[in-house]
Length: 72
Image (cartoon, rainbow, N blue to C red; front, top):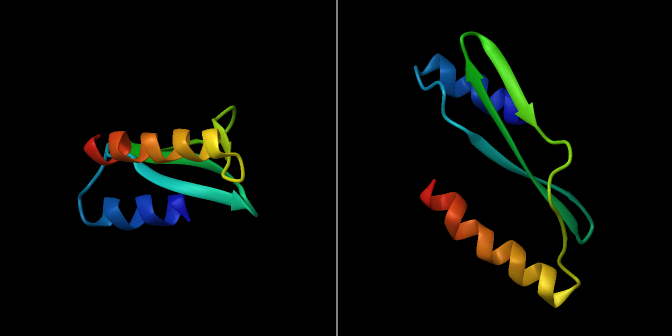
């Protein structure tokens, strides 16, 4: 889905901007990112931080990163 979103945005002239996504499997989630530069797609999804929202500490860590992503 991220590559589709990046492709759509590039058709509108928006490039070199990150598109963020959330990959989930039940209560586990990981934040991913993709962007396009010089007709090359880049997708970051390996070795990312995984969150288990059943654990209160990890849920708090996940919630604390969302405002930082919104400001970026």
